[in-house]
Amino acid sequence: MKPTFIDSDAWEKTNTLMQPAFIRLLDNIRKLTDELSTWKTSYQETLVWDADISEEEQGRIGLLQQELKSTTDNDRAYEIEQILEGLPKPYPAYEWKLERGEEVVITDVWELCYRICFTLDYDPSIDRPAQADSTLFDGDEVDWSSLDEKAKRLVTEILSQLPTLS
Image (cartoon, rainbow, N blue to C red; front, side, top):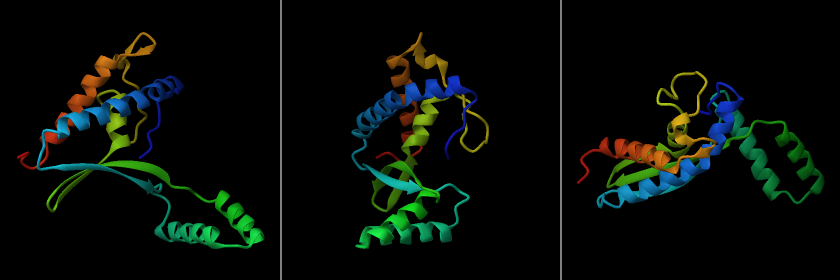
């Protein structure tokens, strides 16, 4: 779910934190999962639709996109592009996938980044505006040490919830 922000300052601070949070998150995942020899880690990109877009509408949009790719008629291609322009679009999701045999754990990487960037009371299941975590700044600059610690705690928390780490 896309977060909403308490104010423009929260959005700007979060915007400043997202790339560093993503970097620290992936680095900590790499470091901490190296120790999990029985779990294989990978990433996958997916597309996510807003909850109010029906499967029927998603299918219709998919068919139009396929037709656009395959048409050789320039007029039809233009017509399809115009139709698609006015229709909803999915947003990219990035998932962290842990696998061991038949066991699979998938976690939304962007959601983890939000949990790093936002205050500790952030809960994606509660519809309320998010506030950037000001403890991750040293003045106007990102405090990389604090950011790294928060990312490490989050990854450790997730890994500790896996069924037996051996």
